[in-house]
Image (cartoon, one colour):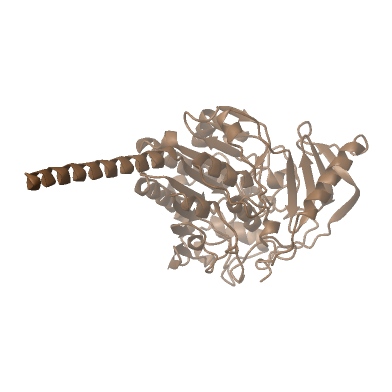
Length: 488
C-alpha cells in the first residue's frame, strides 16, 4: 500500500508541477501578447509636402493616406537635426545628438572614411526593449557608424540588413559629367547604380557591393515582411529606414513612370507601396491591433536637386537648415483600435518615441542620463495632451533656434544645403561654408499663424524673446562636453 500510495502521490505531484509549468508558460505568453509591437518607418529627405495626405497634388500615396485616416496625422512633429546622422541618433537614443557627440560643425554627418559612431555608452530603443523580451531588427540606412562597435547588431538589434550610410556615398571616381548636381541627376536617370560602390550588409558582413539600388526599396520591404512573419509570436521592434528619396533616386521596374510627379513621385509611390505591404502583412498575421506603426522622415527635402528633390510645402527652408522645412516632418501614427483617430496639432519629436515605447511596453526607462524625449502616449491614446512645449533647432553643435509654444525665435540663421551663397557640395567631406548670421535681436515668428516664417514680429513681443532666451540659457547650462564622433 505504501508503494502504491507513493506512486499516486508522485503522480499527483508530477501533475501539479506540470500544471504549474503550463500556467507559468501561459502567463508568459499572456505577458508577451500584452506588449505591443513597434515599427518605425523612416524615410530619408522626405519633404513636409511630399505626401498626398500632406497636400501634394500629384503624388499618389493611398496607403499612407489610409494610415492617417485610420490613425493620427501629426502636423507639428519634428526631428532632432536637419541632417541624417544626428537626426537618427536622436530618434534611437531619445536624446539630443549633442549629448552623444553625434553632431559636428565641421563634418555634419558620418562618411565611409569616418572612424566614429554612436558610442556604446548610449542606450538605443532596441537595447532597452530587448532587455524586456523584445525581438529587434534594423533594416535599411543606418548612418550611425559602419564599423563595429557602432553597427546595429552592436546596439541591441538582433539582425541588420541594409546600406550602412547614405546611398550617394562611395562614389566611383570619374563617373558622371558636369557639376555635382547635374551629374547626380544624370546618373540616377541612367540607373547607374554602379557609380556608387555602397555595400549591403547582412548583420556585420558585406553581401553585395555595389548595392543594386534599383530594387532597394523592394528588398527592404521583403525583409520587413519576412521579419514580421518570423517574429509574430512577439513582441518585436522593427526599425525600417529607407535610403530614399535621398539622391540618387532609384525605383523598381514596376514603378517606372507611374507617378504624375515624375521620377521623384515614382520613388515616393514605391515607398507608399512598401507601407501598404507592411500593413497588409500585419493584418494577415492578426498583429494589426497590437502593433504601433510610425511613419516619418529624418529631415526635410534636398532642394538643391530640383525635380529630384522634394518639397516642404508651405514651410520655409529645407534639409540642412533650421527653418521649419528642414526639421518639421510629415508624420503618421497607426494602431487600429488603440489610437484616438484624427489630426494632432500638439508638438512632438522623434526623441519622444523612446520614452513612449518604454511606457507602452512596460519597459524601464534608464534613469542614469538626461532624456530630451517625453512620453506622448496620453496624446496617442486620447487621455491627455503632449507634455512638450519646447523644440530645439540644432545645426551642428549650435542652437540656431528655439520654438516655445506658438513662437519660434531664430538666434542664428544660415542658408541650408543648396543655397545660392553656398559653395559646391563635395563628398566627402560634406561642408557648407556660407556664413551664419547672428541676430542681436532674434527673428521671431508665430509658427501657428505663420508656418512659412514670413513675418518677423520681434518688435511686438520682446517679452516672448526674453522668455525664450531664458530657455536657451537653462538648456545650455545642462549640456556637457563629450567626445565628438563625427570628427574622428
